[in-house]
Length: 331
Image (cartoon, rainbow, N blue to C red):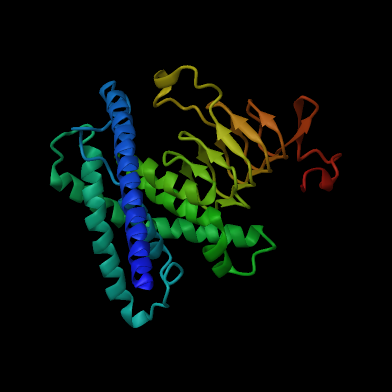
């Protein structure tokens, strides 16, 4: 009898503890609801002040969709290198056709969203034509990327082969997406090209604006921290190292500077070493020049110049000067 009574007492105590805990949880939940209600109200009040909302606005391009498009483009540009399984040549036509159609469908929708920023009623036929024109450029983009791979292999003794460059060199992924985005930029499509290059930037640490004009045989060794501005022009056979910045002299003019040349021009066969900053839309680095590491350059230099950091300024030498030892400019 005592055992039975003790058992019921234990059950009652357990049930009473359960009730107590349940009651405390309810009180905590009510308290949390009140706190979150206050927070929600404060956030809604900040929305009412406007500025960074897109409520009742247009359906903006999707960052997730852009990421999928970029991934699809890398597969289209480098078949077999961005795939989990190898592609047999007998299946290449079917696989390529599927990828072209898949990218076209996604791209057309995102193009329409971009166009609606300035045209609320985006004509579907215009979006389709833009997607078609863009995809028609893929063979030309591949030709340029082939020269970039060649430049990387020729310019980097650490490269074991072109497959390593395609699979492991971050510059190539960034340049591949930038070359694609540049096509859309040239079609005057808003927002979407920039989202594409920022996707690549977030993955590699290399920031190239879609407006930058890159000629053939372009190579960025290592790459981390490279910044290339919108109106930059880079000639053929140019090689950059990590931390190079091609930037505007001043942005104090704000939107008044839109559409104006603000960033430097690097002519053909220029090499720029690590940590160098070159500024200004009227700054032209002459063909065949070498810019040493950690240089801060705000003026043009003639072809075949050797520019070195010296004190708080720079020293500009002529590579054709026979009094220079070869080691002075074969950095």
